[in-house]
Amino acid sequence: MSSLAISSFVDQQIVLHQFTARHSVQARTMLGWSREELAREAGVTVDAVQQFESQLDVRDETRLALAFRLEAEGLVFFPGFAPGWGMSVRRFDSAATKPVAQGIISRLIGTTPASLDSPTPQPNGA
Image 1: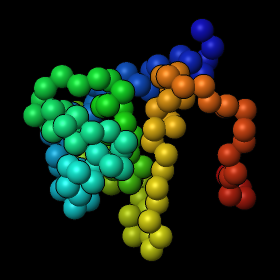
Image 2: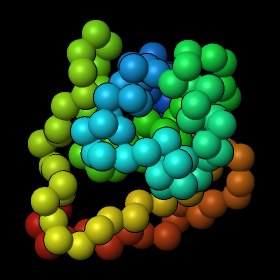
Image 3: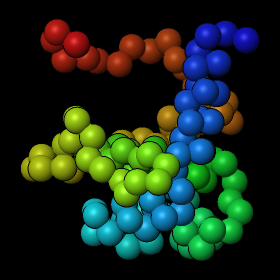
Image 4: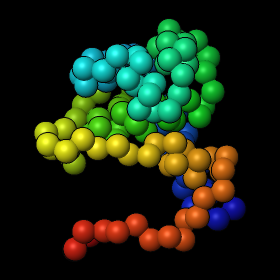
């Protein structure tokens, strides 16, 4: 197994164990988002968000999509604690950000072919 695959698997397991239904509700409140908005932003159904937040079983891909989309807004999640704002918060930027959570999920779990060879532009000094 390649180191990228191992790293992706470990990242997924960390997210799956740290991100809870309560985190989702609290994060939506912090962002002022409805279930419908979170579903749209994460690329999942409203029913999936409702099931997850009601502590019912959902697919791992759904949990990952929700967690990664909320993390893209600058939130961080730790077991036993309310969500917090991460160090690289872009919450106060004037331009809205639209990360492609589904593309990230697809690459991590390998559900669709994606090219990892294409470089991502980085700011100078990064």
